[in-house]
Image 1 (spheres, chains in turn green, red):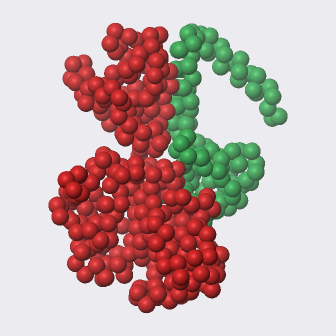
Image 2 (spheres, chains in turn blue, orange; image 1 turned 90 degrees about the horizontal axis):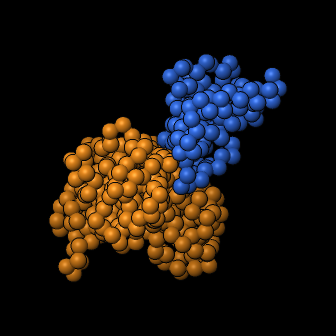
Image 3 (cartoon, chains in turn blue, yellow; image 1 turned 90 degrees about the vertical axis):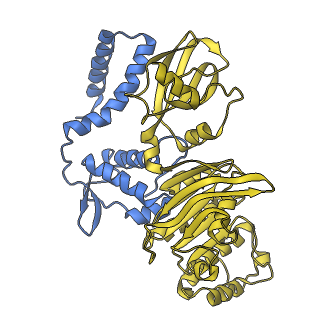
Length: 129
Length: 318
């Protein structure tokens, strides 16, 4: 698996999580596909094995992949439901960034909520399903 | 791995002077078995002096050094059989052929593996008949790496191994480092001023500066511990705003970024702070990168009035 890691931006494990998450959500990796072994990926992209293990754990928490005893890590067959706490943990940092920006731009809470609602309907309409 | 200590390397209060100038000052450091330990610092920070104490080429005059359970200067040959060492110097005897080097190492190291050496030759595209003199700098670095790892050392010490090498040779070195620790929990100590390499492969990072150990931290906790915060004001300032629990300011005029130590701050960054009669608003915050942390720790502003020392006073007055 070709994963690109850049230095000096996001933490490396997050870069790995995002790239694998994108591959799964976009269908490039299908249910039941096997991810490379931790050691194999570590050697091929020259990243500490613990970092790869942390990225895999993160993906497992999100329910995107599952570990099968003794065999390896696979893309989940049925995407497990992500817990409310986990959903919050993923969303809150993004929301915080938005709030700081909104605060600085002087966007009032009402306007902010309206914007979210209007963006949601715009995006949902575009969705094929 | 047979040593009883939980640490592959233990350094206690190590100090060293050269002609009256301090090269190392009171350095205390542990390196866990099985870790890839990165030693970072600017050129001249003391990295090589520290490493020379570990391989027995310098005796600890003040403080103590213990490597794999022994003092490196007592029976060093016993220790050197268990460690692998590679320095940035291109110091292999140029008249040797790759195969001569392999024969030489086999006679020195009891644990030498011909099979692994052959595998490494293949992997590094080294022809056993090639003279070291005829190889490129990257080729000689690969030969040095082969000589350092083919006896499967318990501890691999690399002093600026990739300095001046092409990216492919550097990648080969990093891969060998990872392979070394993935194999049965061997330990690697890796010094470099190339932070991108350190960030990729190390699980622990220690920062040496002017001979002092400024910080030693598990690499994956760094972005959880330090937050880079950007502040903006309407009034330009040539000195950074004073913000509690922060260090390493960088910026100019109306925008400054600081590193917030989340262990010292209460509940994250302040959305807005008053400093010298000016209001500074937080415009962005992100987990600190290794690069930013390094610069924040190492760089001292020309105006030294407002550094971490000052923030403590501010804390007390709040």
